[in-house]
Length: 360
Image 1: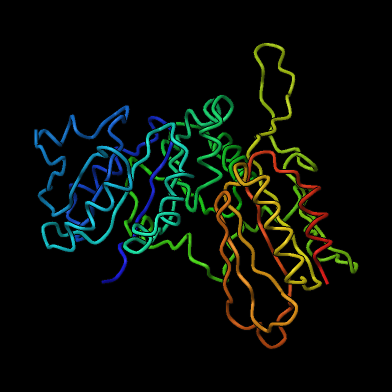
Image 2 (image 1 turned 180 degrees about the horizontal axis):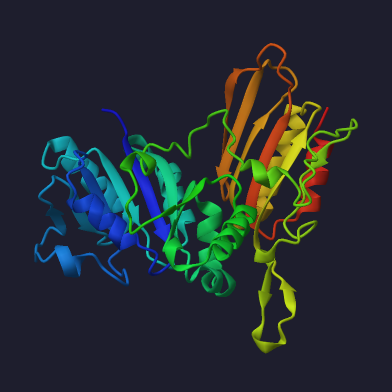
């Protein structure tokens, strides 16, 4: 039996998760989807479309989708669904898990790797984060959970973009990119987004594509500093170093003085043109995730390793890290290692120094 793909849907309160889910559960899209809802959802889908008082907690929709609420814990719910699918009692192709507005998607993602039974039945596809453009600045300022959800995302959908000015939207996307340059982001209207852009995104695949927003690799003064590598390794600017974009300044009340906004969820990109020593790198990364794992949200790299002609791909969530051999370096391709780290106040200098020291 092939693995059941799973998508984690997270997002701010009022960002339109329910709208998106309702569409998935009622529209004739030809896909059979099981939606798992956290029961303590603030705006529960139940009230509107799931008026069914069943013992089972699993409700079949007219379009063949299923909706169920998490009774005890996610693991049990996932196993229960997989078993019913195996026995032919339920028919579905994929699972969407909605986390509550304030949940940290990290532990949910980890369930798919840590739990053997779940890992044998499911494949975690991606984490989608919905951001409400109108309230985003406030939510990102006030709530660390909101910032973490952005850091975890493989894809960011910005809802209610039509309610803010183009400048505000630009400032918001700029701010989000500094937190997470690997997630593509796009405005959506009331959950109207093609399902092909929601599913099979393969955000957790170990593939050789490292999607970093290209704008992130330029400093805001317009100089791309990827090209003056004078034999030394180089690191892209940290958000807040050489950046005077309006999103990082807010107006505080009537003083009108600009405050340099600095989020605790940050990302940085590391590049190196010399190969890594595999043993040294493994030791260093192993030590780093032991110490900083809880603060490391997502990280990924495509690396040039001494002793192999193939790219080495690694990625992780919190303390869980995996790596694999990718395709061969192409003829004439410059062998460059690139990594992106997204986390809460990660000690950039310690990481950079350790990575530099692991180079051949």
